[in-house]
Image (cartoon, rainbow, N blue to C red; front, top):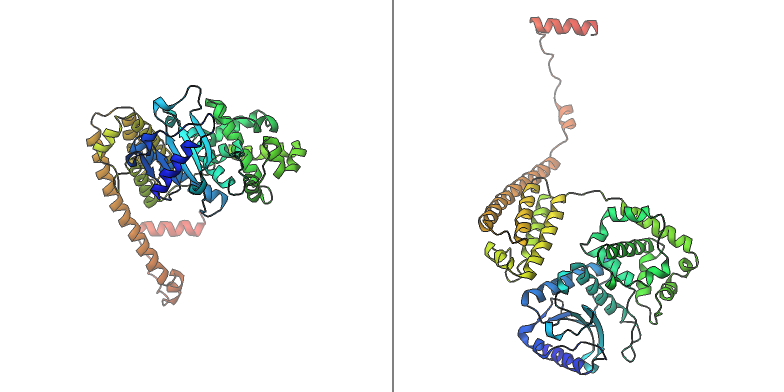
Length: 430
């Protein structure tokens, strides 16, 4: 399998279209490539940690996309993720380049080239990974002749990346800001926007508008099926608005109706969802997962020494900052028993991402020991509650037990001063 893949990459390098970026020969060496768990993704170049991080994120996005589209994993095309060396990047080349090749017997390949420095933009990485995943899904039906193909709608890639990612475009205040504009953007102008050319707030607004449009469309009758239908058109129009009209002609013909559907979705997204707290076991499990993803070389959580070493690398600081954001999000939903502890983890990892390393190892170990004790105590509490509920379900209801008891004998009346006073108050009705 690996030999066939290397042969395919060599063949692809020989058949590159004009302007495409060739895979550097040294990247084909075994020590410079990593294959994902599903075997669909292969990463070349960079460090082992960078490749593992990208492949793990690709698998997470694919799993989320399958859940969103309500489909099973039936991938057909391998996705090659290439971390290009600094000297291999041409002037004026896009930081991220998406290409498709037909390598004869080796099959079709999708290749994403990430230029040096592009990995620091997590939202852009997610969006381009989503572009590749949607393209793989689209090419199962789309005609592919002479190396010509039509990419999936840019707004759909932005919408799904926002829905499955952790970027600001999912925050309710952003949608409240869109509502204040009192009108939705013109469809034609919106569909022609290229998220790759947007930066900062403009990109967040575009992703928010994309997600709102997607939510509005899937809430229509047979909405999800029609989104998939548009994604998998055998002959999609190259013009973005014409392609949209191939699936939703009634909305293109009735802009007022589209604006209502779009605005209603924005209004729903502008309302913060009810916060649901996690259980104690779920909180501990999620915390272990976030910490475990910082070191893929061990089965479990990283040691303080590993985290300190990670903080001394540029890519490591980026990963620690991402983990800190996840822990902070977890703190809002943590079980009350764990909330202060999760807050301590956030401070530790946030400080480490900012190169504040003094006393980290001792503080981290103290928090780890405290969590171990808390895990044990919460387990005992859970076991007791389970035991109590099991025994309560097997016992007779209290009302039945009381009814089965013999009538109680009337108690003798007390004759002390306080009792006589209370009896007189009761008689007078006070």
